[in-house]
Image (cartoon, rainbow, N blue to C red; front, side, top):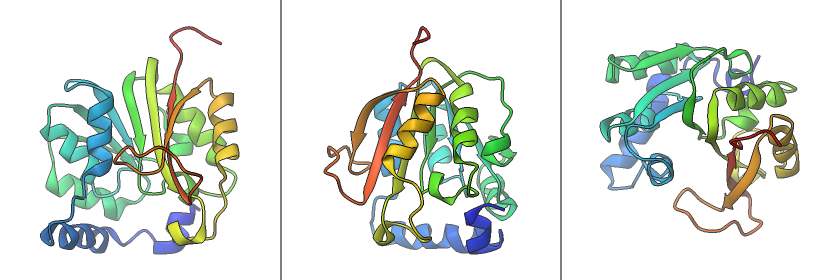
Length: 201
């Protein structure tokens, strides 16, 4: 069972979507993750939104001309995503068991996806995500590192994550402090951009 399911019971899709709708209604930009992805690869690129939730990132990218697939374990989240964008591909799957042969230009894991996986499944999930990337493709993941930035006790360090990425054949290209592109400052949240080399290391 994932930490996310332990936290929510897998039934919080409408509540989660409502929270972001309320933020957007106040004028807050809720598309920072998607904007960063759009800055990294051009429209028309194939993007996998891993841990897509209610589809906030995937739907925005699709509206900008990206070829997007969303995957999530939580059926209540996917119900909302499918209702909002029935024309997109939504896959119900644990990321540690994700089996996609398609080659994506970018895989994004936003919203604390990595530390909300099941304990012990993180390395397998990163490996599965890396396998979906085409050569020269990017894995972009943002997550909290301390209690102030997480809804669960901290469990994943950047050293852990980098080691899982390295084992999956990925190379760290850049690390940011936020989705708006500020350089990482050793704070409690990080956005890591790893690349699958075009030739094996």
